Length: 363
Image 1: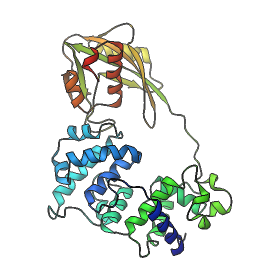
Image 2 (image 1 turned 180 degrees about the vertical axis):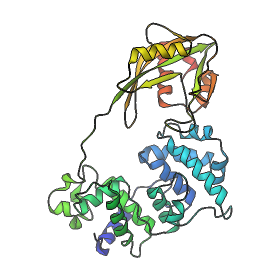
Image 3 (image 1 turned 45 degrees about the vertical axis):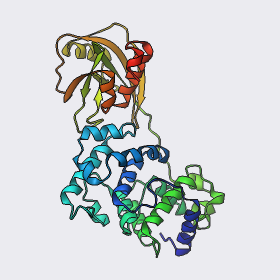
Image 4 (image 1 turned 120 degrees about the vertical axis):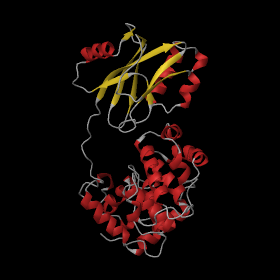
């Protein structure tokens, strides 16, 4: 695989003319770049543009992030989804703060050293080291992989580690005299704006180098994997109300939705017997739900849909279940200050709409 100088020159000329303005673009501050790259994983640029300034205002440097409690970090991250990123970001900040050579220059400056930071993988290590430190390490995100699949008519799955190593090597040879960080951003921008799943090949700056364009086969690349059906999982959530306060529980710090607060609930995989599990759950946790559900709410994740029956419930005695790490009886104002799961937000909104709580108490 070869990426000749004339191709890169055309790419960089196009990027100079077409690149989007973003709050972090042009910065060589490693922390600012790291923040943006962590947020941009699996998230649209327009969404990140709303969150980035708030994050920088609250956590202006790596040391303030390292010292902040995880719960506050999750709250500021709330709405971006994929909360593992926020937890990993916190771990990485602590690592950098602990290993900093100085407060003025705490960050590693090579791709290899960035890979040692907890929560940092090849994509983030290449992006931060190349943009902030001009280190020649190629970024391979989904947009870039789509461009390369078409450019070279790659028959192998772009998830193949062997293919990624080959592309990484080829792209590392093709920075020439350009700033590696700007070349990486140009490739990503080309995939985001031009070489999209439905591309605009007529206006592509490098179409003359594209094997798929020459074969009139752009739509055939990247090679598509068979789509799997997204499973639907069912469950129940229980709204326990005392003096206009609701019972909320905190999930364990690690794992799915780690550290977020939610109503007492469960979600079942497809083959679990629903009725018997429902009866066991309410009996074991001393719950007395109303016979009819208040609502059924669907919440979707990347790998499954969640259909939840919402029950208004009484609790006999005190709550005690080791599956959650903490509990609180939260009035609406306190609830808003907690890092809540997306489903919990939907349930609170449903309670307001159904009148199960005073309308002015929830927003």
